[in-house]
Length: 397
Image (cartoon, rainbow, N blue to C red; front, side, top):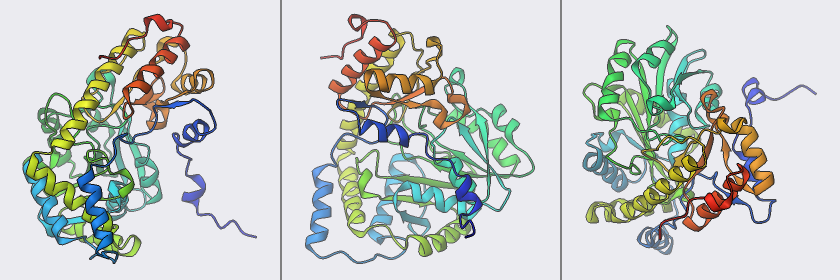
């Protein structure tokens, strides 16, 4: 019998994160700091809206773009929170921001097109580029520069085949954030080489020490930018699977056609819940989002201090809910450190190499979990690196 697998599927590597989650499920008493999922429950007013939609029998398809009411609210939300203006008829409600990434790359990529992405970066970008026939090309982002994309590194990575750039700030896995000035510095490079931009802004609400700035808000950039975001992180709605994509007209039309044939529409119940999330947020200044952000900030400061005291140099993240410490001082790679830590102390972190070559001597640690678990995890890590439990930092009361 012939080999029915496509070349793309055959060559696709398994996720560098998944195997650690699978092992954790078999280890009693294991603490997982690998999951990029809020530990908060979706706020009640959002859950209630989903329940009401079921009670009223709102279980049918919506239009392909999504509920008009939700798209109008997304338009208002982007304007109010980030000074970005995309009209509702250029907004597609997607099955999470993940579908938006897929739609954007399918709409853009021809075979052999090079797509630039930050290194380190979210694990899905490079595989989806490959599945669309494109070629992922890393733009190296170092801890010394705050893991941002510099114009020099960007220019160095561009070739005649470069078509688009994926921006992902606040960044997963590093927590790096690009300021307005840093974004403005790369705009001339993008414009000079006539590149499209896919800006993944799923962590836009989770920044510490300043508001998120979208590259789409800068002069001349909305016309070449696909903005992706969603409700999973800031509104603790991961399982609801609802996001959105905003794009210039031509790209928007192409993405909508692909969405029509692949997903049809995002779940209607989830869309009603998302309506409530934005209505309530716009009315009360997003107080529930702010409450979660402040709790993440407390955890962030605790973990950064803890890893630095343990001799594991840690860049201070300015966004998202991850830290990305270096373990090079232990003489181990991130892969070796994470594997040994999991087996010896039953703490699951993710090797930095899962996110790109720049992460070889790093691990990713999520602080989207409770302070009690974080404190216990730090004690175990302290024991593992030989510093002794007595020296492990304690959480603030």
